[in-house]
Image (cartoon, rainbow, N blue to C red; front, side, top):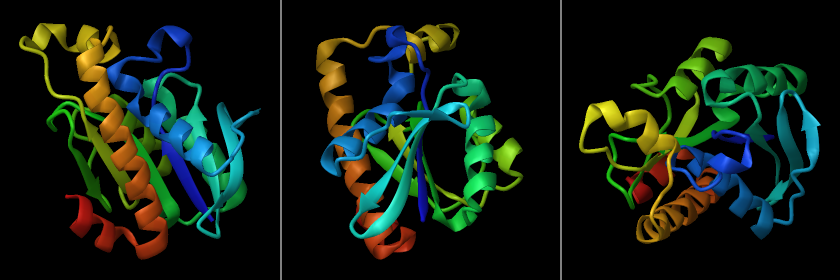
Amino acid sequence: MYLIVGLGNPEKEYDRTRHNMGFHVINKLAREYDIKINKNKFKGLIGTGTIEEEKVILLKPQTYMNLSGESIKEVVDFYKIDFKNIIVIYDDMDIDIGTIKLRKKGGSGSHNGMKSVISCLGTEEFSRIRIGIGKPANKEEMINYVIGYVPEEEFSKLDKSTTLAKDAVVDIILNGIDNAMNKYN
């Protein structure tokens, strides 16, 4: 069983922000594999189903980004999910827009959501897919950049990235993280 987590913020006002790219990937997986994300459990919205004959749990934590790990930890503990079967998808300012990067373990960088995940799980040993969102011109604009309005042209590029990330999730399930990293990095 795989736990596939998209990080984001729960309220409608954050839907089309750079910080919610993880949620967008989960939504695309849910649509493609007809998985209903309609249960409000474990401090998140979850749905269970099958992707390429593998049982999966799709999770969108509802704790807000900086506490995402709390929701993930509850699911991991309840379902006894092996860390190697966790895939976390999130935005990354250190990667160019239109690009994704896969890793099978590692630190959080400057991402507070990932800091929470690593802290709550007590490990860095899980797969992640980082979606490039680029950086603002000024560091002082960082918060507004990640949770602010995204112009349509840029959102179109981000949408393509989330489709790539969705495909990468399927590739990880079918062929493993190492093969997926070779293909998408």
